[in-house]
Amino acid sequence: MIFLYQASGGVRITETTPREHRMLYPRDEFLMQFHTIQDARKYCERMKYNILQDIKKSWTGHTPEGLERIRDAKRGHRNPNAKGLSETHKRKIGLAMRVRRGEYHHFYNQRHSPRSKMKISLGLRRKPPRRWCLDPEGHEHLVYTPFFLPAGWCWGRKRLSIRTS
Image (cartoon, rainbow, N blue to C red; front, top):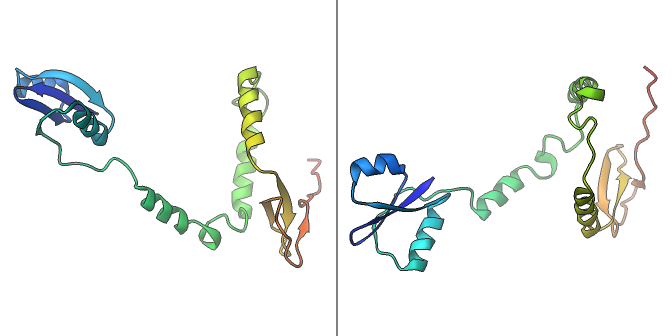
């Protein structure tokens, strides 16, 4: 958390809690607390406060450019799950899901509220329509409907045989 204190002649932006700050500067008065340094600085600009002391730290998260670089690093063939899950991963998921059945399932004996149902419905309506298709290797893809199938692709999903065990 970032704290803002009123001092004689201006304000101080620090990370020290009010209890710790009182020991260092007994005459300062606590004004507000913020989640990010940028918010505290914007508030001081808006209120036209004179900043006496500021924190050197300024990073509070990834920049939009940095987030885009992270996304690019995981797109396409570089994504670990680009060609579907491995057999060992599928087996682990299957074992975990066998335990989460019936009364052990996290949503057991619960219902979505009408408000939640409406939010889900509105969210899905906002999305453009999509369809499943298969590539020649048998991998499934969920694509938007104005999608022209390349040669060898077909509409639909893989239908696995139902296990009786």
